[in-house]
Every structure is written in structure tokens, then in C-alpha cells.
Length: 481
Ligand code: ADP
Ligand code: MG
Image (cartoon, rainbow, N blue to C red; front, side, top):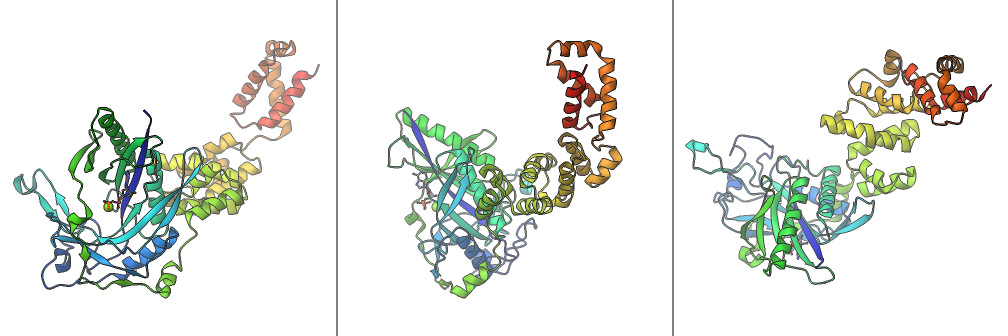
């Protein structure tokens, strides 16, 4: 039996506001427990929530960035449940009337195919607090509650069940991550919990139109875990069905240490939450002026930029998508192109040497020791033949480790390519004279020996001889008399 996987993601991204969604308490990360939770976050009696307009503005930016309708009127609802980290006994969220309606994003797959994924909705809500199950808390055996996170603004982005492989799910999650950072609505910091993914997963026999029963894997906080957790869950569900059982709709947790998912609780239905409009908050009414203002400084979006890199610079879809993975990277690339008018070469260097070096050193493009101007300088020296492509890699490494710009490195390390034909002729004449045996072999028809001579010239010149000229001179010299 052939199985098809169906995946839909719910992504919680923390909005980059200074203060909480309904109170003035700070949202800064890392403060000592319970120092940033005020009476409103604690749900003390007699206080009223006041909506933070900045959170609304950021949600609107997201809506417009995915081509969605921004609701002129949206409503906050109470989602009731009991949990130690939820002091009010309900979470303020949006249910029937979310602020952002249907939109779409594009993902680029490994084979450079572009797939469009539907976004069902995005709604504003507050985060809950955090339970700390620490071994030695207060002598052991206790769970601590930190309410600093309670009331932090979140945008929950719900996708259509449009993904068919774990890789597509990761590509979509990366896309949303890229986008929220690109438009400046979230720092997307996954270690700090600013970007958390719930994966809904089901399987069905290939060709069946009805969806299978899904499970939901909660709180995945790395792209690798998203892929691993879904992969495990797909295999588990297929095993269950092929073993004659049925998949139970439930919420599961992924354990990275054992690389498996485990049941957490049976799935609650919407009516378990007894949603109702929050009487403490007015409906959110947004007029055109508010929307215009919220999107006024939206930068060119990644999809449009990717498409432009493709058409304007003639780059492949895959290269273009790598270069638009982040806004700083895209800007860096364009700065190099502007200075060199060599988009292909620039793309190769940015996606090649530079990306590898950034990866190795685990730093972001903004902190690259090789600036766009420096890389452009190196590309100029490749263009004008001062260094060969091979030596250019050495120059790049030297720039990376702080030896200065391309010209200084080439000068200091003597990496200038030898293009002086007199110098090359002399070098080659000496090598030919020193290897009469090989000359004879070559003239007797052993073409392979040509490579031996090229190797000798490169060795003698420490890789600096201009390869094209070496070829030409060698051809001529070996063919003569
Ligand atoms: P709930 O409100 O119970 O969480 P939703 O209908 O809002 O349920 O769906 C939540 C997420 O689950 C969405 O991202 C949706 O695309 C996804 N989803 C729904 N049905 C399935 C299914 N059968 N298989 C995989 N994902 C699904
Ligand atoms: Mg849901």
C-alpha cells in the first residue's frame, strides 16, 4: 500500500513589541522569574486589559505581506482551560473573527519547483506562563511557575493542510520564519521560544481524497525537530494502520533525545474550551488609514525579490531563493552586484565561499568580516585577471581572517597572477628543457603528458601562472621542432 502524508502547521510567533499585548509590563527576554508580570498578566481581580496597538500594527503587516484580507473588525475571545501557568483560567485569543484572513506563501523545493501553500488565518493572542520542572528547585520535587511570558503578544499563523512531506513542512516553516523577520514583526528566536511550531500530521492511502485522522505534535522549536518529528509520526501512523489499528486523534510531544513522539493528552474539541467573546475588550476596528500606515515602510518582499533576482540577474530559482533567505543577505548580494555588474559571479561567491565561511564560524551575515565592498573588490581582481579563481579563494580566506582587503592581501602574499608572457615563456622553456623524456613521449602521441607539463608549471609558479596562457605557450613549444 502506498501512503500519502498530509501536514498542516500552526506557528506561534512572538510579536516584537516592547510591552505585553494587554499590559505595560516588559517583554524583554531573560529577566529573573516573575519580575515582569504585572497585575493584569497575573489576572488579579479588578484590573482590565488594554490592547497594545503595536501588536495590531505588526499583525496587519503580516496579513498584507501574505496577500491576505485584514479584517476591519476582529474580536478577542476567552479560551477557557485550567493549567498552572495560566492564572486567569483563560487565554485571550481570537476565535471566530481573526484579524488576518486567507493568504498564501510560496516555498521553493529541493528540485527548484515552486509550491504555493495556503494560510487559513492568523490571529492575535496572549502567551501563557512557563512551568519550570527543575530537579533542584527549592530542594527538589517542586515545579516553579514563571509568569514573565504571560501576556506576551503572539501571532498564531494557521496553514491549510497543503504540505505532503516533512521537507515541505520545513520549507514552509522556514518561509514564515524568513518572512516575519524580513518584515520586522518578530525576532524569530527559536531558542528563546519566539517561534514555535505545532505540526498536524495524518496519512491516507494514495489516491484517497478524504483526510486521515491527524495527531498534533506540539511546540517544535527547531527546523530539524520539525522534520524528525513528522518523519517519526508518519512512520508510526502507517505502522498502526498496517497493524490493523486506528490512529487516535491526540496531542503528542516530540522527544529529541529518543527521536520519537509520545502521547500528551487526548485532543480537545473547540467546545471543550467554551470560547466566548471577552467582555473586557472591545472589538478591534481597523480603518484604511491604520492599514496604510502599518504597511507604509514594508520592504520589497522575499518572493518578489526572488523572482526579480531570477529575471533581472538571470539566476536559477534555487540560487535566487538561497540569496533571499534573509533580508541582510539579499541586500549584501545586491551591493556586490551593484559594485561589480557580475550577478552570476557574485551569486557563486555569496552562496559558495561566503555561505560556507559564515556556516563554519556560525555567524550572521551582518557580522561577516568580509563586507560586500571587500567581496566586490575581490571580484574586480578576478575580472581583470589579477588573480585566478583558485587563488581568489586564498585571498578570500585571508580577508576573512582579517588580513585586509583584496588588494592588500594580493600584494602582501604575492598572489598576483603571472600574465607576463616573457616570464611564462622562460619558465616553460626551463621545464621543457629539464624533461626531455616527457617531451619525447608527448611527441610520440602520448597526449596525457601535456597535463604533466601544466602541473610542473603550476608547481614552479606556486599556482600563479595564468592557466590559459600556460596552455597556449605549452602547445606551441611542445609542437615546435
Ligand atoms: P483545531 O482548531 O482543532 O486545531 P483546525 O481545523 O484549526 O483544528 O486545524 C489545525 C491545523 O491542522 C491546521 O493547520 C490544518 O491545516 C491542520 N489539519 C487539519 N486536518 C488535518 C489532517 N487531517 N491532517 C493534517 N493536518 C490537518
Ligand atoms: Mg488549533
